[in-house]
Amino acid sequence: MASAPTPPPLLPVTNPAPGSSPATAGGSDAPIAQPAFRLFLSRVSDSARRSLSDRRPWGELLDRSAFSKPESVSDATSRLRRNLAYFRVNYAAVVAFALGASLLAHPFSLFILLGLLAAWCFLYLFRASDQPVVLFGRAFSDRETLLGLVGASFVLLFFTSVASLIISGLLVGGALVAAHGAFRMPEDLFLDEPNAAAGNSAAQGLLSFLGAPGSGV
Image (cartoon, rainbow, N blue to C red; front, top):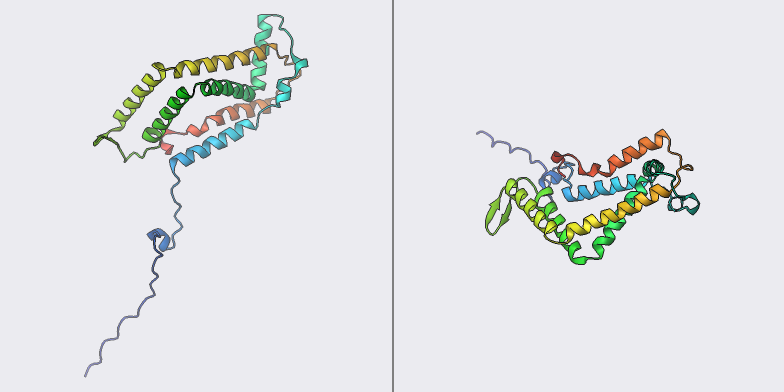
């Protein structure tokens, strides 16, 4: 009589932990995709940190002994050009402070601007391309979403006080920078070629967080 067939050997099976993904259970170390908004904030932080590293001491910016009346318009223009190259990060901070003070003095306009920026971020910039915007049961294409955001931005900026506040803040900051640059004697300032090249790279790095449209940010 023929003997019964030998059963195949049993292989050990590892049950994945509850809540774990199949890639993790199989031992794969596939990286988890980083959210676009978090990546954007990381780029902004890194760019700001690199740019602020070229900031000049505020005591040097406000040195009283270095101020004098320019002899002519050409002299004032020459001073302003050299001071802009040397104090560019400080001047950018002054303009940003003037703009922030102008908006903080009008909380309602600041709220409108923040809401508009949030709408651009979450409805267009950081929205996945395969997830259309759905409002009132209707899905909107990318083109329709973009046109809607542009129209809403135009209405909120130019039919409220937001645009005037932004313009006034920039004008006040620009006036402070121009006055300081024209009256600050640059004879004691030294900007060599390596520092100038570093300043140009820092200025470019300040906007490097924008990235390419296809970078996912």
